Image 1 (cartoon, rainbow, N blue to C red):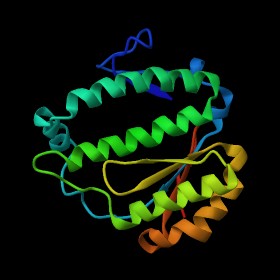
Image 2: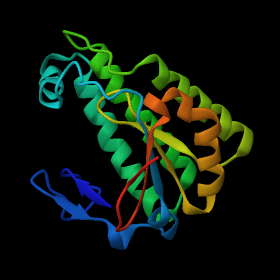
Image 3: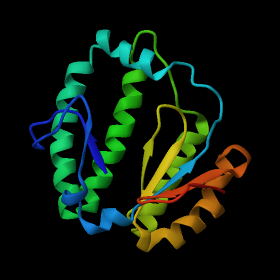
Image 4: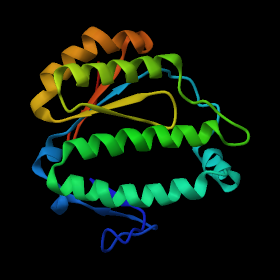
Amino acid sequence: MALWGKTEAYEGSSDEYAVSLADDIHPIFKTYHDSILIVSGETKSVSSRAGHALMEGNPYASARYAQANENIKNLLAALKSGDLDTFINITESEALQLHALMMCSNPSFILMKPNTLNIINEIKGFREETKIPLCFTLDAGPNVHLLYPESEAEKVVHFIKDNLAAYCVDNKWIADHVGDGPKKLL
């Protein structure tokens, strides 16, 4: 894992380059999986560069930056201590806040698709029912990343195949994990 962006919460952090967090991560996060659910393969309606530019006039941007600074402090502490509840809360909140900013920019963009929301609702229900520490984050588009520890991989993969793959383009998703090795398109 790496941190990109200057923060007082981490000595040596920079806006110019990423710094390794390898020595400050709880062992649980060193086994994490990232299953990427391909909701759409279409080109985004707005580039990442244009999306960043929209924040210049966004009336909520300054509050968002303040929240992000607070979140990074709390996230770094959760990553170090292995606090999965805090990790899940911040990860999901950050994903949704970034998309909310796009929705209230001028011009506005909705990057999520109906199946993005269907997947999010399924994840929340699954987590509530099973107590498995599975969370989601979103890319700068409609695709959903599922983050979870190795110890829960078998159950989560079954959940993906049985409940979530149907929301994906051609039932396709990518299996990835922390460490070396190739991603697998499933």
